[in-house]
Amino acid sequence: MTRFLPPLRLVGATILRDGAMQSRSIAIADGRITRGPLPEIDLSGYYVMPGMIDLHGSAFARHLAPRPAAQFDPMTALCSTDREAAANGVTTAYLSQGWSWHGGLRGPDFAETMLAALYRYQLNALIDMRIALDCETHMVDTAARLMAAIRRFDVGYVMFRNTLDDTLEQLRYGHLTALDEAATEASRGRLHRAQARSREVPRHLCRLAEVFDEMGIVYGSSGDGDGETRESYAMIGAKHCAFPRARRAAAAAKAMGDPVILSATSAVRPSGPKSGVSVIELVKEGICDALASDYYYPSLLSAVWSLVDTHGVSLPAAWALVSQRPAEIMRTPDRGTLGLGRRADLVILNQQTRQIEATLVAGRLAYLSGEAGARFLGHGSQPSAPFVPAAKMTTRTPQTRRN
Image (cartoon, rainbow, N blue to C red; front, top):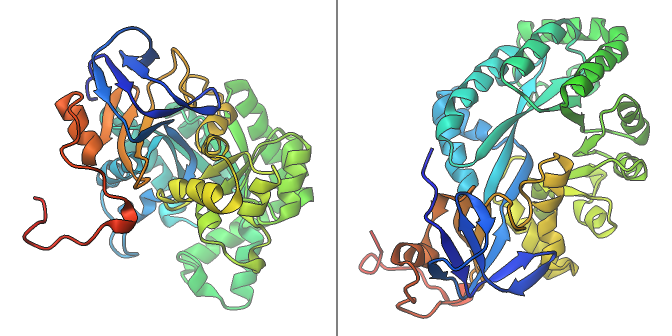
């Protein structure tokens, strides 16, 4: 783990604090937000924002298997994911790992491998990386194994998911290309064995919910297709409603006071009317509590600016969807805002280019670039040249390209 930065005061920036953009300084020492006269770094022309908390991200799968037949070592994938997340302002990341009858990278065997790899990697991680287990509801026969893995690797977040009916429909109509390994006999066998235990699923989920409550595990459901499904999960304590596939499911969760987590990627790349859910509309109606990266880390920042520029949402309100609200949802009061005594999880953005140039995690440097990097390294030195707005930037020629 990298060392803390020396005690510093960031001055001249516009800071998101107490729910408003304020022109004030912020001091950090020993990994926390503090006060007092400290050596200063001039960040005029920058925003300082709370670090992003990503509640559901599967981008690591791209680093693990960039091609279906090309799988890399999990430690290598975690290292690459760690750096990508930090460069995109994520300071706490929940990596979505399947526990499914689909097998392969979503099966229990690989889930245990991934959990063990992250357990080892965390000592050297730049950001706070955790696992969110996406558990298929029909994995009745793996209940003991699931709980053993959760206890061994201290998993604190589980989401129930049911893709069995959709998969059966795809098989029925011959749409095998949409499925991972669906054409293999082994996959078909796992599917039909899971289907055979359908009557046991409600009791299975209730037993898991009881244990989760005893252990203090946060849990919910993902991909709810209607309000009734959402209500059934809520009744057993699975409060989180992530990526609902129908507006009724999201509205039902909101009516019951349960958090609704939507895809930032869908906010900036809408799926069209067939998706049944307009992320932007739900945000504007107050039905969305948090945005998650889904499968693309840059979507978090893009969604924030889209809400601000196109949909009339204030920057503090938009940013709360990726920082303060996720922290509240996950019961992590030490992060999500820039209050005194909180973890020094900061994102530093150039006001003109709107790009992230630095990410600090618990007072440690996780990512540093651009003019902000020069100022940190120069401890407050002024920029040698004026900022160039993004709209006026030109492509560098080989003669002017920096090494």
